[in-house]
Image (cartoon, helix red, strand yellow):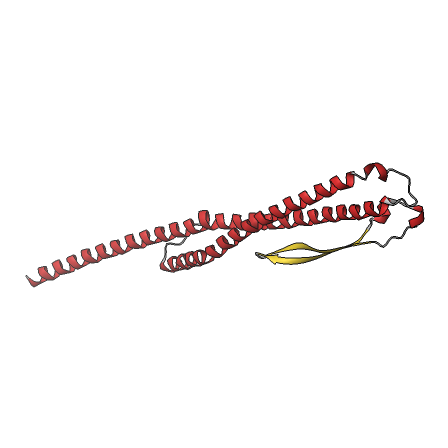
Amino acid sequence: MAEIKLTKNELRAQQNRLNLLLKYLPTLQLKKALLQLEVGEARTEIARAEGDYAAQMQITDDFAAVLTDRLSFPIAAAVSILEVKTRYENIAGVEVPSLDAIEFRPFDYALIDTPAWVDGALIHLKKLASCKITLAIAEAKKRALERELREVSIRVNLFEKVLIPRAEANIRKIKVFLGDQLLAAVSRAKVAKSKIEAARAAYAR
């Protein structure tokens, strides 16, 4: 760290710096608290999405045996995703993804050549795919919030543990130096005054 100048101008600069740091710190602390709250909510959202996915997976597993049957079309093609529509929301200053809609690719198959259970299986497979995408977006949202929380926490710690204490220490150091300089100047002035008065007294005799 560069040595500070022990001057009145530097004292004013350090006091202004400290005032700015103290003014901005509450904003950072508030943002940190909001992000902590949002990360907690994002984790709850993920837990809910994981539960939905697990439940849908269990339902889909019931079709596992019949899904191995030979069909006139590939199951994967029937549940192919055409587009995932997302939008971004600003939460505590962070742009996070939010799911708007999932659009599956249109697919037609001959009902007369298809077992009756296929319709139900396709519905649940689409729900399973939707649950997986919902979970992925929730996880992306949490990662974005956690990344911002880490950065804000670093700044808060920097303010609280480094910048503010450093500015306060610099101010104390400059004040002590200037105080010592003032005392020394007063002492020199007294000595000079005493010498002048002694000289006058000697001259008067």
